[in-house]
Image (cartoon, rainbow, N blue to C red):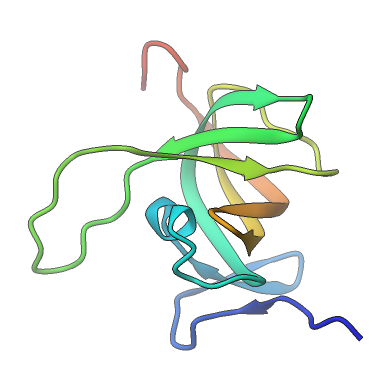
Length: 123
């Protein structure tokens, strides 16, 4: 029997997608595998920059939220997501993605388009 992915860590901000619970995460957290492996994580408001159809990946970028009481820089974070099966977005789409953690990435369960931002000129 294979263990089911779970929404973790406990006490996280839950997001629901296709009747499944996902913890709200950050691009940096996904890149560093801080949530562990096999965890359901949601990334909200990431920008699609590149689609690689040969290895089924989608590159996205965004800006991680700054924790209360912290002084944060304005740098953006990029990651590459494993995208098997579900319809892929197009460069410029702003999406929320829902997936299961793998090393330094998410294996995507699905996404919701929430906007569009020109991939070269910005928003």
